[in-house]
Image (cartoon, rainbow, N blue to C red; front, side, top):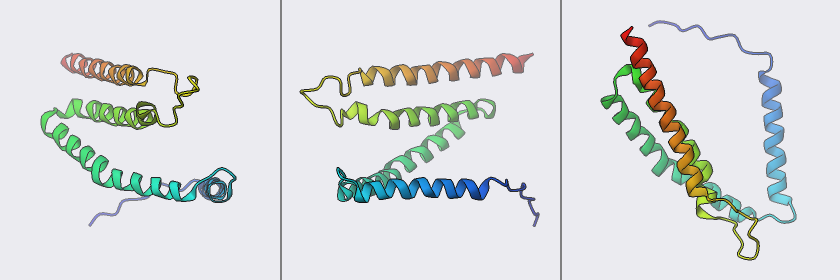
Length: 143
């Protein structure tokens, strides 16, 4: 059994933990005791998000990782897996805009953009950069 030496811990570790904990406490306090909040709706959202992650997102990520591992040569695998990751984050960020959550018929300035097109441009850019990275690696490896 080999032992792996841990890197030294930063002196900023505990101050950053404290700052993060204070921010979480501030957010929870505002959610629970704020004037225009709905803690039950927030709890429902939290449960739905956890279930969506565990029942949908995690299995999809695992399946994509396995398919990528089987189909991609090792030298290109990290670029493709990175593209999957960045595309997934873009999709998660775009969900509220795609679903038009919070849009109001009497206020056109709420969610004014074409979010499906924005998502397509973002994912297309990720795809283009990934293809260029793979081609660059292929050319560089042949030299």
